[in-house]
Length: 155
Image 1: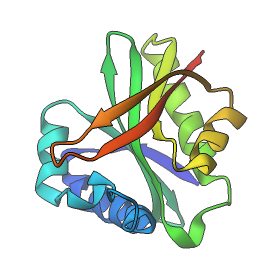
Image 2: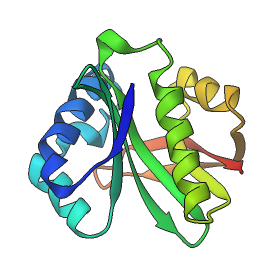
Image 3: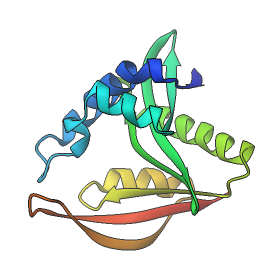
Image 4: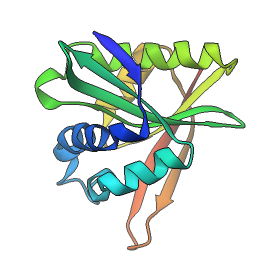
């Protein structure tokens, strides 16, 4: 497996991987906002400084993560592995590459937010050293509230 840093020209690949991975949440209430993103919105985010890593198996993209460097640390989101490759350790390899990236830029904390309705994701992050440090309700503009936990790992 090869994990590369993405460029703006990878926006369509990033979007495709994300949509395939997040389709399983289309029936959540509310569905993940990832499903509302477009290639253009991903491209715009990359142009504004967002970063991403893409995982390849035999030159085929199988997963990705998007992230930003913030004052509190490296904040990641939209971790995506295509459905047929889930459960094979790809997400953990992507997160290990994210830790390597953080170490290379002298960032000591990695953070994320996870819906409380998706315990498998909380378990995934916990299994590699992330701890829950906060719980909150995110208020969406449509009046729907989403309970999330904030997780972090100190490197």
